[in-house]
Length: 256
Image (cartoon, rainbow, N blue to C red; front, side, top):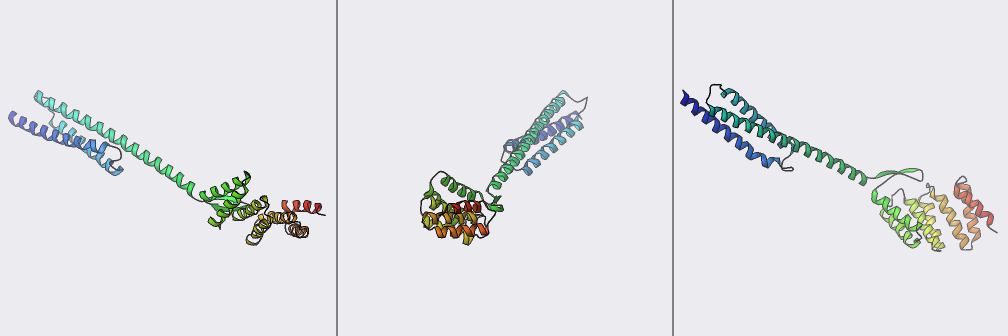
């Protein structure tokens, strides 16, 4: 009887230790971040927990107060292996939680970056328009050139903007600033032609009134007071409440 018990214990111990060693040999490979996905990590954790439960049942079934001291030693070793497996479960659980958090942070950051690249709604001359990031940057860069006194560069930049974004909500303004850039360079005929494009191509834009004001001023510079008066009279009649019309009235009063 004692010989059979010892043989069973040896078989049990060998099988248990082989199972524990086999389990531990897999753990280092699965514990590294990035080498397994969430589903694989969960499966590994469940597998280890199943092995812990099996070992605990074996220990409970084989325990005997009257067993030899060697059985107690074997039980201690098995309990140590169980503790080690539990530690591995804890490591895997923490690694899984960290991986999930990193994935969440990544997608939040990616979403924020994509939103910056998406067209944004902006109000241009009282009208809402969709403008993408590069479009906005190009327009702002051209406007900053004009404000900085680089009228030639600004005119070229606004012309390039119109070629790249002909349907932009900024198109009427860009064309208007092309005319202003030419006026600032004393190319008054060019300024008139550029502002006439505004009045013709963008008749519903608030920039038409400003363009007409600039056309009149260009005619004055060309010593054509009659054309200037005609232009400003039309401005006042068509856009009587606009700031440009008010300025046109003041300019008309100075014509002699």
